[in-house]
Length: 528
Image (cartoon, rainbow, N blue to C red; front, top):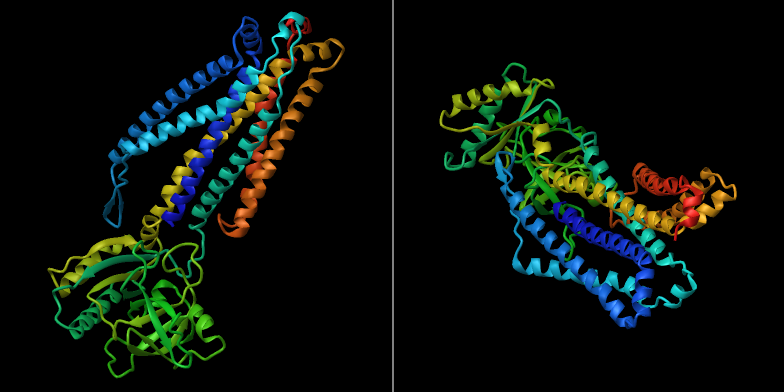
């Protein structure tokens, strides 16, 4: 999950770079339109066209170099600041984000900034180098072409829609985990671990310890159920995957059947609230006469047995044969959003483990009070055996959501940042475009046009460009979701993002349009 999220973040940072370049190009183009008279004077005084182009390119390269150096300094500072942040703790284990910026990375970043400055400064440089000096003598002024600026504004809007849709989908997915059906009951379960490594000599003593411990735990007040398992679902470590062989199903050597495995004691499914849909639970830990048992989930039956009867069928795991005694409901095992996955539960009676995760079911909100009771119960069996990693199941799940939380926090910064960049780009283009049409606006106002009509027309023209860009970005994001390269299509996200962006764009277009429409017609007619 984290690797996929970081890959998406890398792609989005590239989109941010493109958005910044688009903004820069738009601002440079807009600025170039106000320097036509200056360049015409230079050309009229004998300057060569390539001199004009070189001058503008040098200016852009200097600006790009200053920006790249400033960005490199911020990157070094940010990397050091991130490394200095106190480590996050997951199940008591400190996790630090170690980030460094090496010399090669800095050189590449600075070079990339300079190259971007050259590329996006080339168009306005060539545009101004072709200015006609004769316009000084005639007093005419050729309107600047706005097609390229509109194209850049549309592309920037499309990039903003794509990034905001991805960010919104990440947010929706993250917060949905709190209400998602996991297949087990998260509330009212307290977890605690012990480790008998080096304290027991054989499986018999390990099994006997688990049996005596469960007897004590189930006798505690406020405890309605207790069980021991080899692992906890939705853990950062994940469950092991084993090859399995099922009687009556042909074995494919090229693609053998696989399933997750987990060892639990009788009563585990009741404690976790995992429904037993067929068959029975495991035999008691002290019942040594029963054959080795396994409980499978519905997905294993559906995938490997189809309509076949699972109960009583033998299944081999790691060279040992077990009889399927029950079928339980599917649940989540390794991660939120995972597809249904086959799993084989084995009994602690048959596969005892030295490391155990105690699961205690109590009333919701009162499970934390059982921590002292657990330690006393273990101490009565082995005073020197430590109990560690005491936490509720809800806390366990929240801690292990860290690899989802990190990308969400990054999107919290990147999403609004790109929205701000898009609004700045739209505002800049509209503002410079209207500034060039001040005289036209003055004529229209003098002839009786209302300010409302003038504002509406300018806002409408700009929103047409923004709308085309938003539609393009929306279609790319939708296609990516349909093809599975991004998260699934969420109607709320796909509907809300374009609406928010269009609202921001409307405000960005309205402000300069309103300001221009309130100008005195006499002043506008005198303006050059």
